[in-house]
Image 1 (cartoon, rainbow, N blue to C red):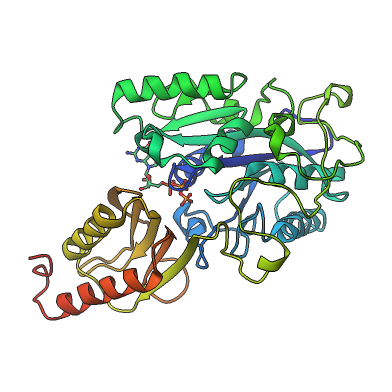
Image 2: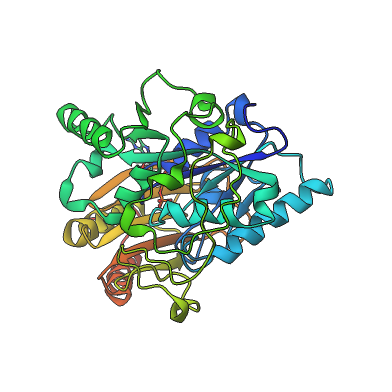
Length: 382
Ligand SMILES: Nc1nc2c(ncn2[C@@H]2O[C@H](COP(=O)(O)OP(=O)(O)OP(=O)(O)O)[C@@H](O)[C@H]2O)c(=O)[nH]1
């Protein structure tokens, strides 16, 4: 393992909603180079699903409570990392040698990085490792769907992983690659479906790309400067560390449309005035064909407003749960999961919407469910 001796490297896995962070993480965690990694997952929705979707549940996989780690729950981020570390010291969890944080797809990576850097306890034990950003080639190629959070995620990255190149047009992938290079010339971009990268290269072999905090766009430097008591980046001698630490202070100027601030502390899912998350649970098995058509119609009609849908479904005639994902206008093929997670066997769906009323989605789903109830199995879609 590379890294500054005595410090545990922290890798931030960032990337916009639905860009393939959890899919990549699941694959990375199967690699021997990351066998000793602890994982901290933060989700925007009130019901976390990613920790089920990576299908690796143990005491070093921690789900942060609902809310976005870059704004409403930064204190919880420090607390969760401190807690993991304290358990590690006391032998209550395996002696992990790396921490991977998967942030929400809406998170600004810079406050997360500065939290790890500036928190006095964390900075005595942890050091920043590579920041890895997933970029969805099928969606990001559509300029109109870009959001400011996306830009910051790309800017913060040491390594960029282009996902969904298998379903994106090759010329769009080439154009996107060129654009990413222009946006962040120090990061190396790889195709997730290519063979030019490895898990170790992505996370454990430190990129010589300098301090990710120094890549924060100039207008974002709204936080008070820290005490400049910089800690080294993994694999970097202390005197190489040129970046500016920032206190985990308030009044930071994100400038990316966050409506957050002190007044939003009680609304953990708030990120932007128009963006919110909600979840739906369904207690009886559902018909896939009908549900698939309902979801496709919802995304056709409101795709630009439905930033993300993900869920675990209890389908008629299926023993195992099925994971379903929608990303803006795209519905991905459903995938069988290995087993039901702990808790009641029921379908759980999380929606992250922008400017779309929760009541609209709920009413539409209820109508579909009522129709499905009136029809023999398999005909709900007719
Ligand atoms: N075809 C294709 N689908 C992919 C690829 N990577 C991810 N997906 C699919 O994209 C959907 C979303 O993937 P996730 O890994 O859940 O994305 P995420 O970034 O973790 O999503 P959030 O946590 O909501 O931000 C799933 O249906 C994945 O199977 C890829 O390279 N190719």
